[in-house]
Amino acid sequence: MKRMLAILAFTTLGAAAQPPAAPPASAPPAAASAPDYAQAESWICRPGRQDSCAMPLATTALETSGYGAAEPSAPAADPPIDCFYVYPTVSRDPALNSDMDIGPEEQLAAVVQFARFASLCRPYAPLYRQATVRSIGAMFMGQDPIPIFNLAYGDVIAAWRHYLAHDNRGRPFVLIGHSQGSIHLIK
Image 1 (cartoon, helix red, strand yellow):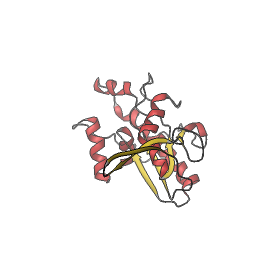
Image 2 (cartoon, helix red, strand yellow; image 1 turned 135 degrees about the horizontal axis):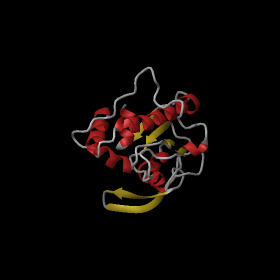
Image 3 (tube, one colour; image 1 turned 90 degrees about the horizontal axis):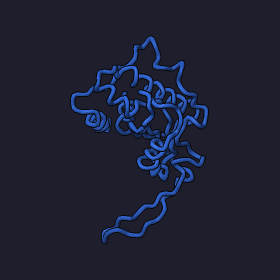
């Protein structure tokens, strides 16, 4: 599975692309300026609250005779595992890294790609200062991608560490990501 995630990450960026280099071990990535993941507004999805992952989603059953009835799929009451999701490049913020405001792009990514998992696991999706859609063009024009991706990666690491320290309690978990999100998870 890890190999498949790597393939997804590289094909999204192009065959010649490489993931950003890890920051030096002596300097943690953006740790001092990382968002406060103890705050509810730093998360798109968390279990037990009304957010992008808490709404029932229409699900159509696929049966041997074809499509069946459409019924809502609701979040599980007491799922046995956790899911930690890092969303793809979706932010249309004007800067090279996104802000910490949950915009419609982040919400839609969580609903379309991740909300369905809430029927099987406790959903955790941190908001992070991702490399924006604008930054992709800037990188093609010569902008150094390393500081842009390191800022985003530092946020993902801070969210992950917060989750492990305050929410996980030894539970099994699944990491879910797409595009930029899978790059950060692989790293």
